[in-house]
Length: 189
Image (cartoon, rainbow, N blue to C red):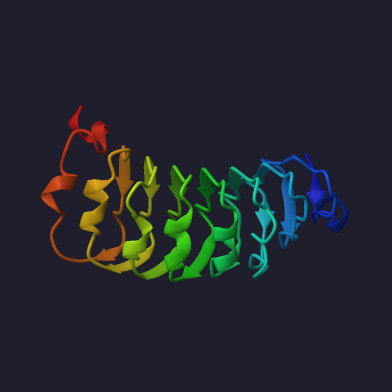
């Protein structure tokens, strides 16, 4: 098990391709990684704190998996996260993030798995989250402070298999097109 902060020198390695250090006890803020070859950042289940740097996503065009689930990271989600254009997995669950989601989050055209559950995100879900041609398969937004209505656009996402929005401040009725066995099939067992 590793302790302490993540060394800036590791984040500054110019040819770093994979950084996996989940299930440790790293603490302190997440440094800004610089390698344009970086494909994966997996720091799930540590003790990271502080906010993501505003420039966090800049230059990280090869990252397909960004996983910081189960930490204590706070602050808003920086818009620069959408510069991680090859992102398939965005895993920020069980932290202390707050604020609204960037409307540009829907520009991540390769995003398939979006886990934002158990945070303090708020505001309405941006309609831009579900653009035409999106590849979203799993969207976990439960246990936040989202308000407004559930986006009917989710029903038009042919790849969507799981959508969890419980435990928010959403109002209105659930669009009928979201009540199918294709979405959340485990409810139909």
